[in-house]
Structures are given as C-alpha cells and as structure tokens.
Amino acid sequence: QVQLVESGGGLAQPGEFLRLSCEASGFAFSGYSMSWARQAPGKGFEWVAGIYRDGTDTYYADSVKDRFTISRDNTKKTLSLQMYNLKPEDSALYFCAKGSTQSRTEYSRRWSISSAYDYWGLGTQVTVSS
Image 1 (cartoon, one colour):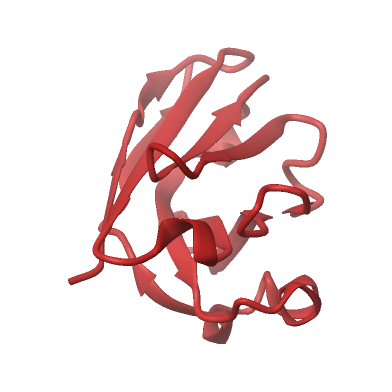
Image 2 (cartoon, rainbow, N blue to C red; image 1 turned 135 degrees about the horizontal axis):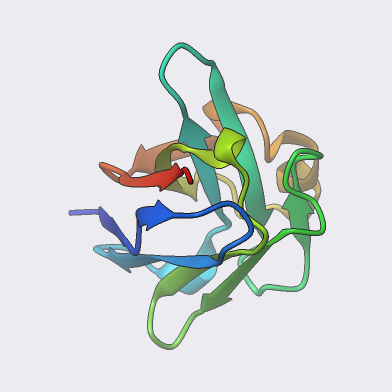
C-alpha cells in the first residue's frame, strides 16, 4: 500500500535551516507529482511547494518563495524540502502528499488544491522559536 513517511522536523531558531525528507513506497514514485503542505494550530492548511514527477516544474507558495526548495530523487523514491531562513510563522506540522494526476498541465493548475492529492503522510513537526 502507499506509504509516505516524513522526517527531519525539529526545533530551529529564526534564520536557521532545516531539511525535511519524505520516503515513499507502494507506488511508482517517478510517475506522480509530489508536494509539501503544512498546518499550524488555529490556521488553515497551506500547500507550500510542489514538484512535477520528473522534477522539471516546481511551485511555491508566496510565503516561502525564495526561502524553500523542493526536490526529489526518483531513484531513491524520496522527496525533500530545504527550508532556509526559517521564521516563527513557518512553525507547523509538515506533510508530504502524492498527487493523483500524471498530467503536467493539470498539476500546474491544481498543485495547491487538496483534491489534487490522494495520499498524505502523518507529518513532521517544525517549530521555529528563539
């Protein structure tokens, strides 16, 4: 069955760096787009970054653009999120999610919509505080 296991979260100070990883299994990883999303207590669900199945197209929320980098290793079936210059408002539970479409066009239009995904991991907590 499909499994997505996130790791790499933890406590960081403002301005520091963290790298999140998501290990995927149970499906043809290279055939699907993948994304990271987050949810903070009392706040809505936010799609943070997405990457097309071959890694050629990436997408970012305005809140993380120029600070976060999404990447993937299709050989290792791993999705990563490098988070630079962390801010307190980045504190949240971070999830990786598997896209349900293989279409580049469709994913480009829907990458930040929850219905575009069919599986999520349990999440890894990121806390940014001094």
